[in-house]
Amino acid sequence: MTSSIPFRLGTRGSDLALWQAHHIARMIFDQLGLGCTIKIIKTRGDRDQDVAFQKMEGKGFFTKELQDALIGGQIDLVVHSLKDLPTEEPEGLEIAAIPERAEAADLLLARRDFLERDHADPFGLPEGAVLGTSSLRRASQALASSPKISVRALRGNVPTRIRKLRDGDYDAILLAAAGVRRLDLETDDLECVKLPPEVMLPAPGQGALAIETRSNDEMTRPLSALHDPSIARCVGAERRLLELLGGGCHLPLGCLAEEDKTGLRLQAVLGEIDDEVTEATVSRVGSLAQDPESAARVCFEALRLAMPEIVGK
Image (cartoon, rainbow, N blue to C red; front, side, top):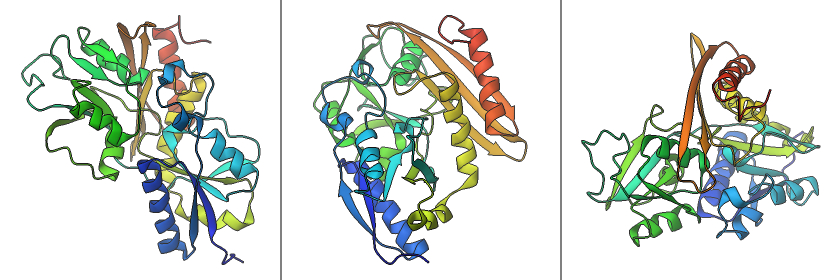
């Protein structure tokens, strides 16, 4: 029997995290007829807004405090951006549902008339351009394509990052399309270019949401009805490759899986970047398989052959 007591839904307090929490709460009400109360929990990633990701130690910058509250019984479920969720689930927790995936692509935002449209560089960034991102994945792919640009660390929530671009701190920035679209942010005064997979592969799970609960919790069992199996297989392949590579947010890995009647296609790119984030090389691989595990393993072996110095056996 389903309880009529509202679920206590835990979330970070950023604009995007709150959008995601309210979106899932509406989905739970509309599809399951169940209510939610929302509790904001601050994470280490929220507190350390001035620290670049590559200088943070450990994993779970945006998830650990939420997971601790879930284990401790202060909340009943958490809504995560799947790309922020480490591949290793803490004991006693599980992903109850992956309900949807928005557009997985990244956006390049730049000052109006700044990009060189006819330039050989697919990013269109002129020599010396200052590109804002704290993602080693984005930085490595951008530098490999545009070696004469300068990459500068960019932190803050999505509106803050766009404001810093408008303030002139950067010539261009890279953001996930899903965040910009979900917040319905105004970008008409900026150049806004959606980067195709052949130019920029997204983070594993980018654009997808995950509902995390305590394992075998009868109260939250109805949430499994929100699960989308096809999306779960695609992001499962991406996250399995991330797991095989032993990485987290610091790993400059981009990948995207898509499924059709021929099977599951996984594209991946792994970057190698210097400590100063000034030079990078990348290796691209791909696979076609019938299941996420096989797709991930084929790409892992290909990357191990291509980059043996950074991919362990």
